[in-house]
Amino acid sequence: MPLSPKAAAAAATILWGFTYILTTTMLPHNPWFIAAVRALGGGLPLLLFARALPPAGWWGKMIVLGTLNNGLFFGLLFVAAIRLPGGVAATFQALGPLFMVLLALPLLGVRPAGGKLIAVAAGVVGVAMVVLQGGAALDLIGVLAALGAALSVALGGTLYSKWKPPVSVVTMAAWQMIIAGIELAIIAAILGDIPPAITATNVLGLAILALAITALPFVLWFTGIKGVGPAAVAPMLLLTPITAFVLDALVRGIVPSAVQTLGIAIVIGSLLYGQYVDRNTAKG
Image 1 (tube, one colour):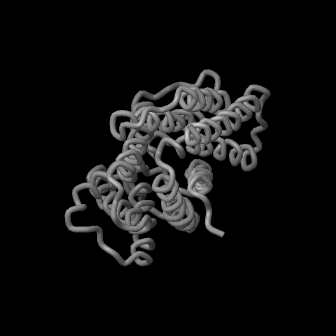
Image 2 (cartoon, one colour; image 1 turned 90 degrees about the vertical axis):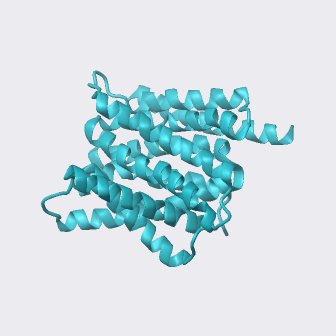
């Protein structure tokens, strides 16, 4: 049975939560190289499956969407992941839902309900309680990169909903990633951000990153946006840092404190409340 749009979006964000543990355990520390491999490695298999081109008049918008949803997002995400403590980077990523809800008004003409804003804000507080480390030093470039990544993907998702591309979700995801991959490969080459050697572990990690953490979840994510809109799926992005925290605990043996446990409960509660607001708004 196919997933509902919200379930598809939730599955995507959970898969994205594996990115941090994979980056620290299996990938080389070259953010722009990793981002380029992720985009091209995720986009090319999808293109083989879709075997379709966007309409001729859509290439400009496709470049904008590919740059926002994949190019800037991937590159800045890995810069932040390397320059900031993992918990801090994940917390900044949790600002994505708030950006999407706020962008829905000027770009889509959709005024978010007050309850929706409360739910998202509570979720951000909960994520901060879960992942922030006491006394963590904040690198300015890392902070700007993390904020830029969250804003980029939020803007890209909102524009995707506004423009309503006349092609399949798979075709859209494939071409966005290929466009981003070309952009990122050029940046990696210019910056010389290419690892001197690639191990077998790196190859396996890059394959997992491209297929299981990129190609599949991006199709699921855009399925959710296309089905119910960006504001409705925005709270699901809070599942990404929660998943990353759980994996970190399981793999690295980090036991959550009482404050972190309370943060998890707040995040879950905010997600449930956000869905409750959506249902009441639809009924009204």
